Image (cartoon, rainbow, N blue to C red):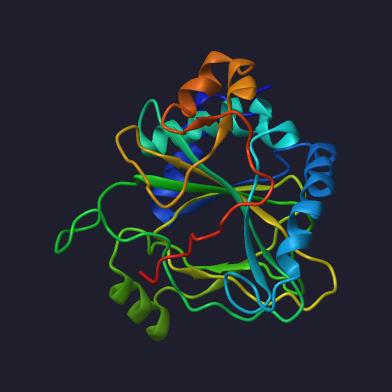
Length: 261
């Protein structure tokens, strides 16, 4: 059920255009997020047996299998969410990523970075073409690894953003989130992960959406045919560029890394 009318979605999109991200507080039901957390725990466990995280010390990138609770169209095809995404990334967007970032005790500050390079070298930054929708599976604060980000750095080069961070024009800010909160961000905004000082993993889901014509070869969603066949038409359309498979693996080869841009 929609929580925002058209004018409210317009206002949220305008705030995003200004700052590079926008928040939807208490958007998803806590009970649904608790179900995701329970389903995620056994997926994280095999990765934590490694000597170090696949995203640096104590930090794990884990792709989610597109099945069960993780293939719920009420989440990835949420009416408000898609309504805002379409305002930012154009009509008929593509869903291209379903994964998690999870720091545990022993994790460190990441370097400041952007998640993708510009579309064109030596040109001014374009309107948004790639979005990350993030929501945590636990309450998040400065103790367990809240995102640290900057406002208004999504339409400039990494060097300009870093210079503004250093001279105070773009001060860093932590983003606490409660279970059910949703963040929509332009992946070019300068940001970094922070340490988790607790004994409880802090999983943050990322669903990637891109413009209709933009293909990301470094990420994909393997969609089981039986799952795809049961989806509503709008959800099928979002997933149109992703490969269909007989069965999705439970553990993926996590070769995706954030770009140092």
